[in-house]
Image 1 (cartoon, rainbow, N blue to C red):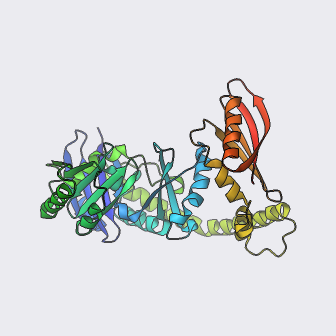
Image 2: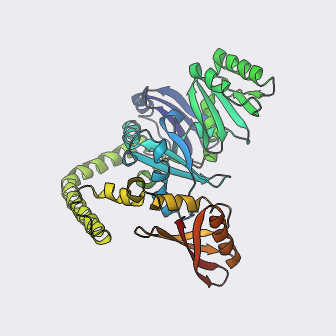
Image 3: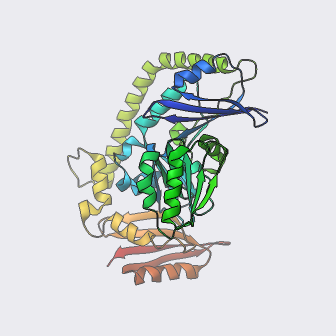
Length: 403
């Protein structure tokens, strides 16, 4: 059976932890240091298997978004603008990873600056590492439905939900743990490398919960436990443009084959960069011209438009905050979709009239009527347009506007 290598990279300190298991599940290699130390340690080593990477939770924003559609392409398009207010930088500078749908119906989301992720991947690549997946150590904490705390060497992880939580240094953990609700059920695992600081944190938690916190002491180190629970986290950062085919080394050539392949690919890319740059420049000019032509056809009365993107956003927001804009009507309507058994198929908006047309699909026509009444009770004007009965579904449209 193939080996499996886990690595955890800390961008701030440029340090790497690694842990390799052989095909029988026995530890084959472990250590820590700069990425170059790992490269030196494995330079003459042959192994086959996958590379699974972890990042500290502090490097990524964990959040969620209420998006009613279940079509992944539409979710990917909507996520950046649904979580925009939570970001500390511009949407265009961030990479968004989409996880599972949570029990409350929202989609779990992780956001990280593209520049940070690019630097992380470059440092791993310099050590000969091409991870097939990349997850957060925060979400690799074992979770049984209660608030879970894992204390390891120098760090503490607090997992509050299937895709929520935080990680921080032990020195800062006391204040954070003190903010937990007094009646919260807390499960604590103190790892073998938790040290004296871990003992202090355990005592603090027991005191604040009047001894109700369930405390377990593990013989394993924290990194080992996180790696053992790696597969239970569904939120993988390597999505979209960062999605990769997992690279493994064969038994005879080991890491040398990976290095040779990397050098060959790099040389080929250098040869193609000049031509690709010219092509992408031409393509960008064409996209810009197409975007301006589309905007001119949609809004023929707008003249001398310099920033097409800003003008699109202005129209979507109803001209910079006017009542009845797309976002106002859309937001007021779709918040009632979760739990209604309705599936949004299409959305159209007439800016001049302020009408939002929702194309919906439901098991029964009564559900469309009920949804229309729900919107009316919420202070919206809702009119049913068409209702068509299919084999086992009903398709219909509802026109919505603010009163």
